[in-house]
Length: 469
Ligand SMILES: [Zn+2]
Image 1 (cartoon, protein in one colour):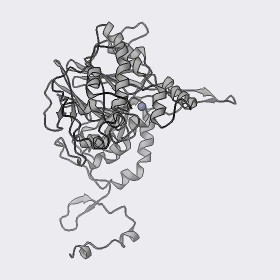
Image 2: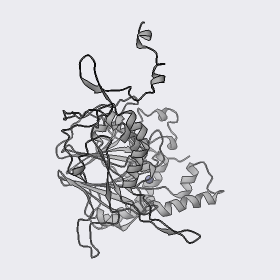
Image 3: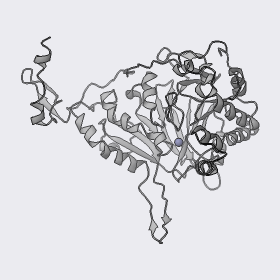
Image 4: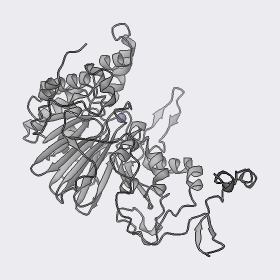
């Protein structure tokens, strides 16, 4: 078993923050009681962070808060698939990806669906959008009574010639096609809930709606905003031309640039606001687009990393020494898609040499336990021995201000309910699709039983019978 201490991890992460409670950690994590000294079953880096209580602090007007709601590609109880929530002091908030399991973390962190209307997808792998169907479908039941906006790459344009010589493609595989298919897939779901009011007449069409003439106000409107994944913000001569702006409102600018991942049509994002900035790379081979973009100087650089292929297959219960094919298979995936730990160190070194190291570098999309974190940090440190680096896990929260980046972990309940977090300012709900007139009051209301089979409804037990006791 790997021998390492919590102190080793903190030394490697180089987090020179105040308030690290070295002596009193590992509270509140149920797996810790199972194997308190097994490095594969704990995350001391996270456990050692000072705590943050969701909902207890108002974000300062000039501050950015980044909450990690999902941090791996292999969902586990401790980590959902990737999602990053960014809140700004001006009241705006944004999601970067919404991978499988991350929705649970949003609710646990006190974020309800009324604050989850703007989603920026890095690409269309399920570990980046797996919970979109739940968010889309149940948004109208949990506070989002207006459309859901989804930014993401255009079609890949990929074309190939099959073994018998037929040219195949291009394919409808971009964000628009995805959203249309998702909406169709959710037909039964959406209709079944359509006795609820799902839109307001006085909801203002937001400026980022790509076609205001459509007057989209309904919560079951799913609005794709496609981004040309080839764009970098610079022309062929390297002169800035702003061709990669995804969002530019209310002082918030979100740009995109290419990620090189698995199949054409993946992007990374940069958010800039109030002199603060973050980059989010969901998945990519290590690339020069990233170095170029991060050279503008970012406060927080969030970048996927992957452990070596032999370590990966060993984690899956396969002996890498006797199963070289399995290692090769895993290596093939990495060679098409991912950033090795060392390569992230190399990228950070390049930035440091340019005088533009991020204030905090975060590795994510990574199964974070003491054993894997130690190896990841050691690899990153081969290139980047000094700067602040950490490995993300769910519930990690960063507060970003001009004076620094602080890291904490949120204390959350396993039993949290969704709570409406903002007062809904709209007052004029439209009539639901399925409605009726109350015979006594004359009031119009949703007709919750309109879609039941009438014969089956006759078999429903009368309330008066079981309420008699
Ligand atoms: Zn991924």
